[in-house]
Length: 316
Image (cartoon, rainbow, N blue to C red):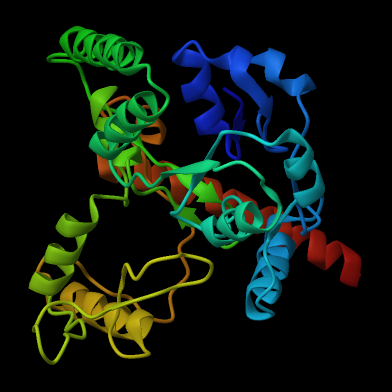
């Protein structure tokens, strides 16, 4: 049985199922286990990955607008390998080779009845399901079951060790410029390791909160459910929106909520000269705000006196 994997997670799943020896080709991003690095690479990026985060983002958008794939698939190499199974994904066209590319390549160049196993997880339970699905397709269901039991034991062990511990706030960022906050299964992972998720929450909770705040998301006229749209290289409709002005609608509603909050005061046309923190307050013996303000005032007074004296010296 010859296997080809077209994304790193698929390669790691195959290795954990004890089928690494069956691998004949991987993606250009597969680097674990280390032994797979010597295998033929079937994919490459059509975008220059040595650019800045912002430039890569712009390049990807241009590629998507041109209806060109972000990744190239070496069809000739695939033909020479003649795999029995290809493990790929059908979740995001800008994250790895698209399912349509793989399906079309199979129809064009493979002589055997190669089967495509597609991974499509959104939450941890989906990942567990994908692992078992791969194991069953490759006739190693017991290995899949054993692997999942080990994973769940480790998770339970971590949870027990972290009971009654302080939960640090954790922010996950998938992309820097523009910033993409980590979603999907990442909030679940943070919760497991004892963290508190910053910003990113499970979509359902976030949508419920925004709706309660007053954001009027567009609904489907027939079903009256959320009307979902498709974004970028994503292969499915999963984006809630407010017509074509989602950002503006959310921003306006959040501003309205802030203005209505009794404990929030807005000061327009002001400049913040200092941020008071507990660490700074420790410089004052009695830790009072008045003491800190007096200390800071003396520092600013000294600074401005020195500045004025220097300016006078230069003028003279």
